Amino acid sequence: MSDEIYQIGAIVIYFAVMLAIGFYAYKKTESHEDYLLAGRKLPPWAAALSAGASDMSGWIMLGLPGAIFAVGLIEGWIAVGLTIGAYLNWKFVAPRLRAYTERSRNSITVPSFFENRLRDKSRVLRIASGLVILVFFTFYVASMMVAGGVFFEQSFGSTYLTGMMIVAGVTLAYTLFGGFLGASLTDVVQGVIMLIALILLPVMAIVAVGGFGPAVDEITRVAPDTLSLTGGDALTGATVLAVISALSWGLGYFGQPHIIVRFMALRDVQAVKPARRIGMTWMIVSLVGAVAAGLAGLAYFSSRGIELGDPETVTLLLAQTLLHPLVAGLVLAAVLAAIMSTVSSQLIVCSSVLVEDLYKVVAKTEPSSRFLVTMGRVCVLVVAAIGVFIALDPGGTILELVGFAWAGFGAAFGPLVLLSLFWRKLTNWGALSGMIVGAATVFIWDALGFELYEIIPGFIASLVVTVAVSLATFRANAEVTEEFDDTVAMTASVPTLK
Image 1 (tube, rainbow, N blue to C red):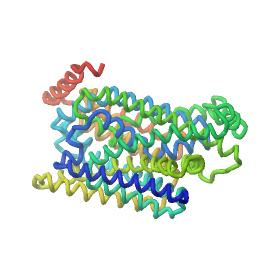
Image 2: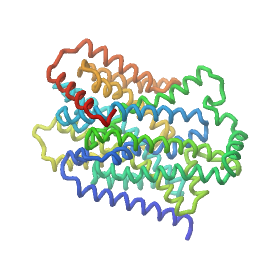
Image 3: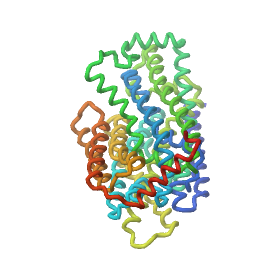
Image 4: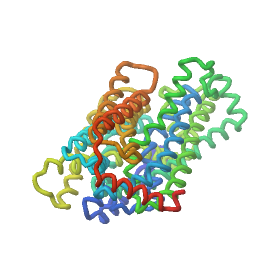
């Protein structure tokens, strides 16, 4: 049996498991809230692994190892920033958001929470935040479609278009029918596969080179600056900017809709602490594995005089070179898992925006739950089609595409989420102004090509504008104040969060 048949067989098994989970979730999905938020019944382990898998996306299996391979440990500051940001997100945002979204008129989407929290009767804030989500998720979904196309192109010699359509088709199938529960349960399986692959690959590569010492020697020989956290340079202004930019990825966590919606779906506030422990353990091990895979790949391929045309394929080539074809196929499935877990989560969020935050706002009558579920599935199909269309002509690396969308959400929603949870004087006009300024700053900063990562000026501008406009427009509202105080009391009374 040829190597490719083994690998294709492993991929087919993986696809079959994903579709089976999607069918199971379909049978469990009865209401609109089930489809969009799994009825707020996610257990800690499911929320933790789902948040991690949907967060890391294809860049942890392709983008980050490729960046480490090509540039060195200076790119590892991204992993440090993400770890810090994720911990703070779980520690402070998760418990209060879980309590507040239920207390505030049972908000089941991020835009509806903003509207309910601030009693925005104009509905402009809800519509605008929904549009921001759709805009930036088109880039995010497209980046994952690109990753899918590259995966099949490099792994099986198929065309880029064929690979992209296969990934889009299978992901669409289980997300379309399984909804949020289907996306979350498949994320759990995908997260486990990714973790195993990111432990296995660097270990196998280091063993093949002859051990840890020879691997370090080989890396130092071929690229002396690779193991330097500053890229081998003195602490120049450019180096400091690069490190700050990498660390600032952590700021983005507070505003990522596909991640914080997992907090909203937890079965209760008490589930946050065990979920945080599981999620952070998974994340730290996975990130260390991704960095190690990039370094070990450099040592392995350079020791054999092999040049990689595309550094972002280092994990794919390591798997196919070092492992039994069947095991290699399972590792390749891990790359697919990273891609598909994020796409499915993003499709559900976009569907929720189109149905819950745009359609229901303009609908003249209250639609039935069954109709809303059907609408949600139609919207998943539409968003997937748009993502495929954009990915037909990809521009930039996977990491660059993800980075832009990450910055957009972080700047537009990050300050707004934090202030809505921890500041009584936030107003709807302050929130709307800051969100627009944050999103616009990211677009402008990126277009101007500055070295500093666009999330930093975007986040700061959004925060300053939100606070300034809120102070200028604040009017005390007894109902809003009571709701805020109730939420604070609810989270403060949960001993397991301390």
